[in-house]
Amino acid sequence: MVATNTTNYGLIRTVQVRNENIPGVLGALASAIGSAGANIGNIQTVHLSQSYVLRDIDVHVEDETHLLEVLRAVGQVKGVRVTETRDEVMDLHQGGKIAIVSRQPVADIAMLRKVYTPGVAEICRAIHAQPSLARRFTSIGSTVAIVTDGTAVLGLGRIGLAPAMPVMEGKAALLQQFAGVNGAPLLIEASNADEFVEAVVRVAPTYSGIHVEDVAAPACFDIVAQLRERLSIPVMQDDQDGTAAVVLGALMSAMRTTDRRLSDVTIGQVGLGAAGQSVVSLLMHATGRPVLGADVNEDAIGRHEQQGGRVASLDEIMATADVVISTTGVPGLIGPERVRSGQIVFALSNPDPEIRPAQAIEAGAALAADGTTVNNLLGYPGIWRGALSTQASEINRSMLVAAGEALMEATPHGDLSPTALDPEVHRRVAYAVGKAAVESGVGDADGLVDLE
Image (tube, rainbow, N blue to C red; front, top):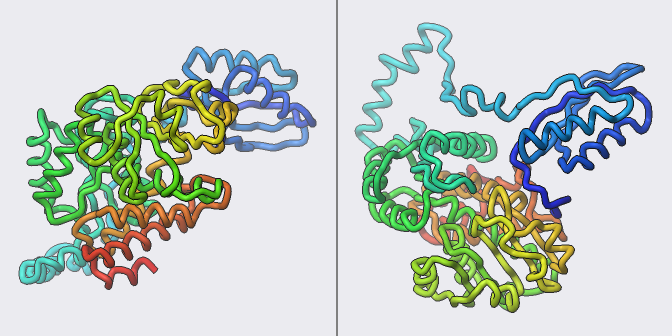
């Protein structure tokens, strides 16, 4: 979980190389790429013969200029020739990452009459007589709307609606893969929070949940509060709720590794925007202790105080906190000289953290992580599956704490988080969340059967 260097990687390119099939050539090739300041990702053998090997190598570089430097370094390795360079990231996004497909293929007239007219009328009449059947006989019961206004996209900021769509599609693809939940991206054009809320409320009957994504603070707080007030289905702000649950799970794992108790450590939160405020709220709920909070925005400081947090400066947090969590979006904010021996440092801003884990460890931190390991993907698929399966009316703190505990239990001892690509991790989160929904009185126990 420790990064290998401190370079900011913005691009991934696939470089195909043909090298002599003799010992040492691949090692020299890897050394050349590393010496040029790039990271190596996936390596795939395309063709193997007695005399040569053709490989696709993913390289992580800063920009196109850096890529040219890497290619020059590779070209100087004896026995190696670059055959082509591809941008597979752009290629795989061609046409988008998601599609609406039929679960019931229509191959003959008999099936057509069942799926569409006249058979569908029977289903319409049944739902009209008993509206709750819509969850059972339509996609409503397994679909959430992923809504954004494009004002806080990843670490890119206010880039607009269309540029936000690839992120929304990514969320939808991962919801389906890891939780069997349909995610429907909706780009909301609104000039203020009220317009955003009104648009979502009007389309809400199509869904069983609202997933708010990449909406900037402070508007996101008002939007989520209004939606929860006006809708009878769960509303989750992933940057807030998902982040908080995953951070809690990683922190529980850190306590286990360092043989400490969560209730005994001093926690500092640097950055009190959407993610930071929710992390503070959930941690104070879980520990019963105030969290130190630092931010340059006075309104954020005020909200922090209102929910029971204690205001501190960055210097005070770095000097006194046992655990430092940072969600500022400011790369390099935490210099290595600020890190104290034995501290736990979570620098979670993506794509560039406040301090690289390797830097923090070298400076004396006991444990360190960035947003690649402590990532929302660990939380939101299972949280939504648990909520939808139990037909929960909301996603509450008990459900988020349950998600964090499930993540800790799924994490190998010594690590901070489990692998997000393990389907079992998401199943465990879903069951824990569903169970918590039932126990807190917002979910139906019959749905737990589907989660076991």
